[in-house]
Length: 431
Image (cartoon, rainbow, N blue to C red; front, side, top):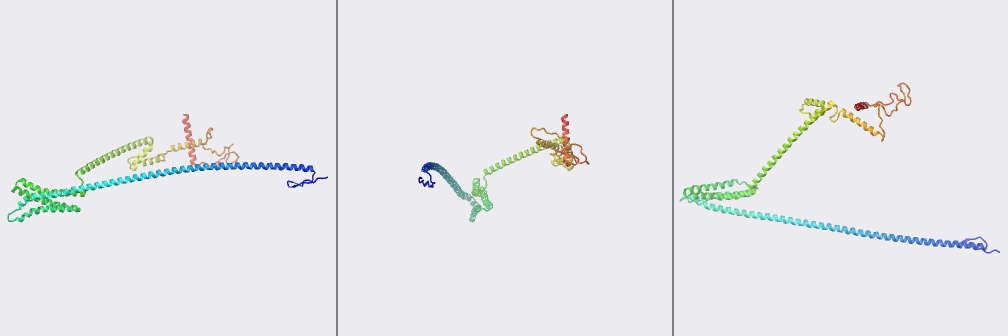
């Protein structure tokens, strides 16, 4: 008798089996389901732990980011404060400079105003003194005319000819008018000498009349006193105008002229001393150049006798009194065939030295250089193992005539020089 089996386990249809097998399979299925449930719980726990770890990582990262942001904000704030302090310092410095410039400008203005005021005060003082001097000179002129006129009027007085008394007044007025004209000419910047000449002519005429009439009619004191008065008045006024002329023309005072004369004499003495020193230096340089030229000539005559003799003859032939550099260069080229800095021996020695340097550079470290016994040997051509013949067949390894290219004539000359130099050195070493 059969038992109806379980139709499905976990959604799968089971074949018809026995009751025991069904229960066994059901147990296995339950175990697998439990295992799956346990695995699912582990995965859930693992995922939870992973999510918590990720959340912690995000939280830590957010904390670190917040800390970095806080530090960045603090640094930015510090930088802002520093820049602000720098800008405030610059502004303060600019304000200090502006205030200093303002104070300097104010001081300069005050100094300029003070200098201007001082100049104005000086000009005012000069103008006041000049006006006082002008008025005093005018008053003195009137006083002198009053002193001198009586004697002149006495000289022209004749009973019945009283009109002649106008003559001395006319003479004095001539001098006065001429001096006024001279003052106007000085003010206008025109020539003034003829006005002053007329004024002095009138003053001298009046003084002559006073002397002549005073000595005859009065005494000498009266005569010469009134004559002095006739001259002193116009002369004092003329001194006033002379000062104006000097100030207008910028004429120097006696002290200034003396100082300029001293400065000119000092400058002339300094110039003469400098010229004398320069002449002495030029003479010393000339003598030194002559000494150097003589030393050079002696050295050339000693070291290059043939060239020197030819140079002396060449200089005489070309009309030179000494062996110049051009003559020496030409003579050296005539005898040695090269410029003065070159010669055949120098060129040969340089070539030998250059070949030695090339040989030394071609050596490997630690190897001994191979002596080349034949300078005409071609290194790239292998030596023959036997004698060759111009007409015989070419044999491998045998060098025949014409196998190698011919040497250049310059190379042959250099090789010959090198061989001769080597032979000479060998002889010197043996001796």
